[in-house]
Length: 135
Image (tube, rainbow, N blue to C red; front, side, top):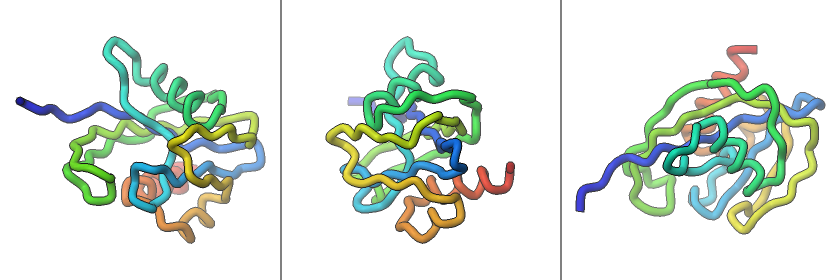
């Protein structure tokens, strides 16, 4: 059976307090990242990131804008072999209240600089660095 890369979305979200949300999930082998997931057939990427944030952490997003594109190819940071095209966004939320689903193990609202004290996955480190550099 032929396999193809999966298109995924995620977002680095900033709160009114200027904190960003990072999460530890069941899928990234103990590392921390940002909420996100697969784009469904016929779904626009911005709609997918809105849906994923509602499903995973219960947040409404505003000011969604493209951040960067990354690729993860058979990376052992992920719990199983996978090939992802990671479409990353920056966004805002008016709340820091999290309603986690079963995928979210832990979460933290931290300053971008403080986030580096957590064991972030490689892709999230790059996303946060881009966020800091674009401020």
